[in-house]
Image 1: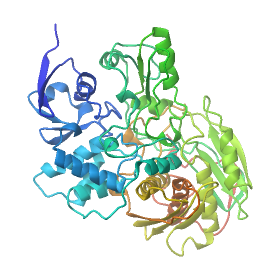
Image 2 (image 1 turned 45 degrees about the vertical axis):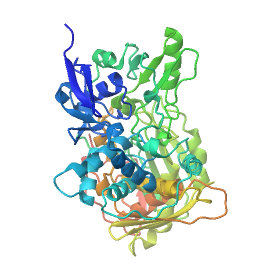
Image 3 (image 1 turned 120 degrees about the vertical axis):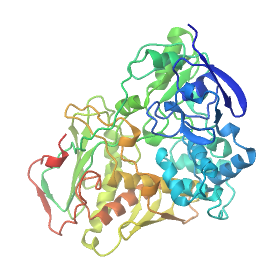
Image 4 (image 1 turned 60 degrees about the vertical axis):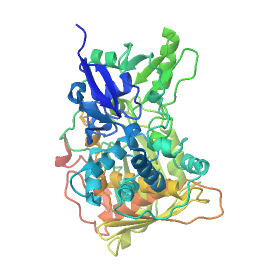
Amino acid sequence: MAAPAVTFALNGATVTVADDGASLLDALREDLGCRSVKDGCSPQGQCGCCTVWVNGSARVACVTPLRRVSGRSVTTVEGLDPDLKDRWVDAFVATGASQCGFCTPGILLRLAALENGDRPPTRPAVELALLAHLCRCTGWQSIVEAGCIALGLTEAAPRPLRDPLLATWRAQLEGPAFQSSGPDVVLGGGGFADDTAPADALVQLGAATTTLAPSLRAARQGSEKVQGRNSTVPLTHPVPLPEGEWALTLQTTWVEPAYVEPDASWCRPGAAPATPLANGGAFGGKRHSPVADRARALAADTDASVRVLWSREDVVRQGPKRPPLALGLRPDRSGRLRIGRTAGSADLAALWDRVHAVAPLVDIEEIEIVGPPVGPDLRGAVWSEVLAALTALDALDARDSGPGTADVSVPGGGRAVVTMSGDIEAVRVEVRAGEVLCPVTLRSYALGAVHQALGLVWSEGIAVDPDGALLDLTIRSFGILAARDMPPVEVILHPDDRWPLNGSDAVFAATLAAAWTAEGLPPTWPTRRGRQRQRPRTGTSVTITAPPPDPPEEHA
């Protein structure tokens, strides 16, 4: 029997789609070619990238059955009133509220929907609306600012016009990867791999499958995907502390880079595959993604165009994690670092040079542990934690005298001074990164670095069972800070006559140090998840004579 048809209005035009149980998201992208609607977690319904309007209200398309919109009106960014769309896009561009742009169309639609409500919108309403979304790039503040400007809650501050070339240059330094900016990117036109795939391409869905399907819909129907869930298992710290007498110690856990666009590529026979890094660097998480090589090989084998897509669960299971570590430091800045490495992980030798560049007196060893793959390419992996610890060590005697402050310079890069006021109720960031090029872009990257660093110290981590299997597979389980959890951040840029340098890495490391110092230097990260906040240690040293087990509350 033929599938029943569903008729609805899409951006003012009547459309009809066969209903074979598909979601609204798949109907929009696969049947109607509406690629501004993004698939970041389908079908978890947790990232907000596929948000559209249904009769003027924001709705997540990946968990909306197509039949639910029969006879209704569906609006994507393409169908917004031109004046409304321009107002919102201008606000996002002016504040740097979009970097890679993958999440932005859904966010824009949800915030613009506040204009359709019964109550006048407010800044708290903007922050509450953003709970339905994940943006890993911008640190939320610029998005909240854009929302308040577009809604008329605050007056737009005069900002310099953004030169697209200079903005791209600055983004390349900070990423480091190619990244364009402008209205098209805000509207989802960043050129993402799966958006540019030909409609007739065969589809391989999933990291473990070898099956090719004639369409994404057929691939979904033929897959045996088990929906990921959030666990209630506490985090562990898998690398034991080295033996020794230490003035300062730190242990970290498994951390997911949490880039929003899943790994994707496609390829025509004999051609170069589409890059999974089309408009951003994914914090290093996709640098060695296998999807492009797989698409090339499958296209050659089948003599047809092939799309290769990973689900969110694939990304979490297969993608590299931030290497867990255990560090002990002496007062003279010497110490010992243990880096956790799992079977099948990439070579971590590059991390040794990066650590020795910031900590020449620290000895390093790799420890074989059981768990998901780890990688050396994630943002500031290992060296930034070590640099933050050294910075905190220098301030150890003064940690109770005032707010957390850290002044960090990174090798070959810029310098940042980060100050946390009170109980981290506000953050002040000063950045020196040579010629600024585009102040909006540099500020946006600095805000994103503060957000990611605060999350790493406070809340981020994923649970792993004793056999190394990941237990947290949804975006909501990663511990990423929401917009309403972010303290206000003031960014001050200090231009100079040097060639432009990366500035956000220094901001990232300085924020790690300042936040940890303000917390009182508890010996494990994250500091605010699943436990009471620990009081500052006294000035006495810590002696480790044997690898200690995790505290009882940390056991799975």
